[in-house]
Length: 234
Image (tube, rainbow, N blue to C red; front, side, top):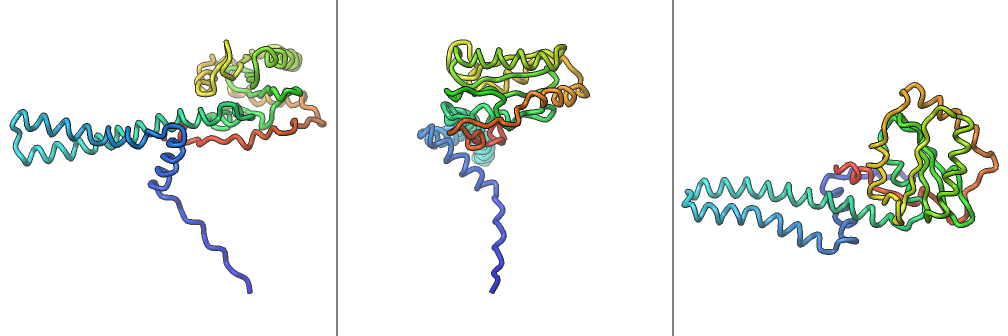
């Protein structure tokens, strides 16, 4: 006898809040106490001010209610900010962490789903095309990643000689961009080509892809995931 699958329950805002809290607490165990302190500090401060200034009981209650709302807003803001930091910290050292960030990028970009270059050490290079031109992002130690980036730069220049090429090294080393600042760095690149030129450049770059191309063992960019809402602060 066939059985019907139960429909998946819709997540409410408090479920999402709990998920964000759990993720953040893994990196910052003190986040709960910090939120509680912020939540109580604002109404307590208002109460002290009202007592010192001889405010009536009715107005004191009203001000405390407003202060409690402000405290909740500040506590939620604190959680959101620390959640962003926690997600970035949990991505550090994970293979494919660059692509996990690139998947949350805004519209207007053509992002390759897999690295366009790699070596035996599992250093990776990702490529995306947008208004700033071609952006190559490496994942790995600076000394080895630089060679991969330069090689890809030469290949891109052959098929799109007039398009600007930007090279970014993602990582924690010297002259590298931390994962937490990668999106900001990309978004601050100067726009140098038109919207209509973006897909044209993307099509040209497809000719560089090798049909025999395969990712090295142990590297799966899809396993490095990040919550997009946290990145946007929502």
